[in-house]
Amino acid sequence: MSQFAKEPPYIHGTAPKIGVLLINLGSPAAATPGAVRTYLREFLSDPYVVEIPRPIWWLILNLFVLTTRPKASAERYAQVWTKEGSPLKVHTERQTTMLRGYLGERLKQPHVVDYAMRYGKPSIREKLDALKAQGCDRILLLPLYPQYSASTTATAFKAAFEALGDMRNQPALRTVTHFHDHEGYIKAVAQSISDDWVRHGRGDHLVLSFHGVPRRTLDLGDPYHCECLKTGRLIAEQIGLKAGFYTIAFQSRFGRAEWLKPYTAEVLKDLAQRKVGRVDVACPGFVADCLETLEEIGIEAKGDFLKAGGKELHYIPCLNERDDWLHALTDLALKNLLGWNTAATPGSLAAAKTRALQLGAKN
Image 1 (cartoon, rainbow, N blue to C red):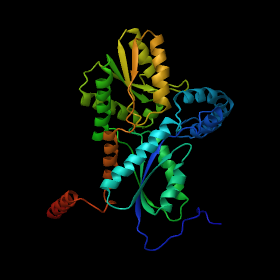
Image 2: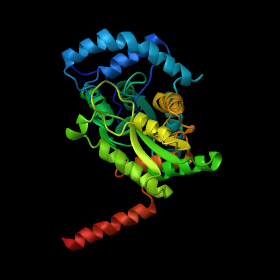
Image 3: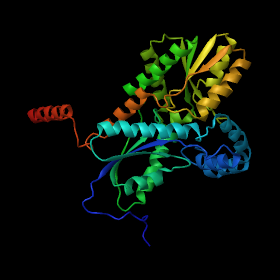
């Protein structure tokens, strides 16, 4: 029996296409305990997410986490769920549609733009199969994680490579590992904060909250912490914030182990106790609003802040479908498609010719 999955028939002379696959984390199929349990089982069973010896973690996960957490998590999801589904899925779908349109204007050759989720549906495997079936022989994987982490970016690539390994006729793959310091992304986040201040006034302190990861991942070589700090610094510089007006912090701690510090919850508690007037919170590590931003910050953190004596906490939405962000994403995709995009502009052809002449002169 063949070890390969069934292939779509190969047709000679078919014009090949370029595929662009956006990848995000994923979410439950519904805001119910059953759907959340299914999602959490897949998510928390990933050894890239929880780096605890498998036999020990299997017991913890199945005897404790999956028996207690789904109900509470489903209640949290229900607070932000929309008629169209989870906010993360809705925004990712819209971003995909907009990117498809912008690339269509600038990428003058056949291409397909789609999205997949690392956990839940649509899966990376099924979307890679779909891109192949549509004639894509080159596929760019573009995870929507600005900062690289083994628990997000690396595991998304792992799923893609495993799917590739089951294909007889494998497409060429390229990957975007991060864009934490991409000029367009930084400007879009900074402008989104500035725009929010124009609409709602400016708070007394800004917290830039990133998703946390265990502290030991930094010691093991994960660049995530450093990339978050750089993103925060660049955003502050772009806005023109002075030192002391903003704080970079990390949210979503899970378990008893030490995670990256300072913790967002503790930063907010300290600001509340110091009687800082209004605190604004933005989450640059997320390009689409989701449970961690809308509920964890916009509802839970806000409630804790007020209970601790804080006056007002204002959450600044993620980039979502901002036009400047989608143009930045388009630029990022085109940059990583160089060489695959044969419909080069006159400017790029001239630059290539100049570079070739320079290399020839050196030789």
